[in-house]
View (cartoon, rainbow, N blue to C red):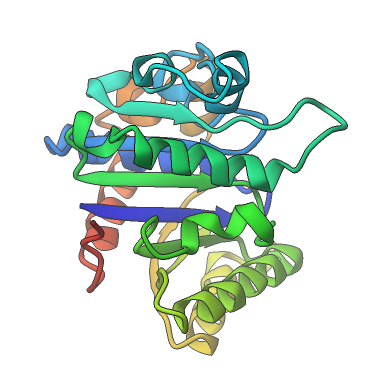
Length: 258
């Protein structure tokens, strides 16, 4: 089983990308699980036609620390297993610790075996890499980390911080850096400048640029329908880009997990 944690600056399109990658693997016949690690609990919406999921933390609070696995892991498009970690009530508790509790619950409950998972994604909150938000990087959870970035300065800065955190954890035998993905934003100077910046960032960490995704109104149109482009426009150009990225990500050496 491959377990992949995806990080990137908030608002870059991380959940959209993860959902499309999940859909690409499910199309190919793999067993996929996607776990949202953001208190907003909206990672999995596009794979459920916009319908929300009860969060793991919410159900654990209601159940006094226990809950049935089927309540918090439900299937969406193409049978993809979906879960949302959730977070504490506003103004109380640590959201990062909530992620850690949710992931520990999934391990205890045997979620990956129950849903015959070949590829598991952790869609992790923005550019926060401290405390519980670093949990997916640790031994026994993700075996690789994929970092999303645009060519914008603050996005590159966030991606570099994430990569530094991955390197620190990797030195302790935890998840390795699989590489970077460029989300094009149509910046002044053209897409070549954006790609050059992303390639330079990857080179700084001895890593690689796994692929680049265009900004496309096709993606926004699909989201208005509550779907990924893989479902809404399977023959479109963007669906092809996500399929190529999915292939490149699985070809990265390493992984295997537990």
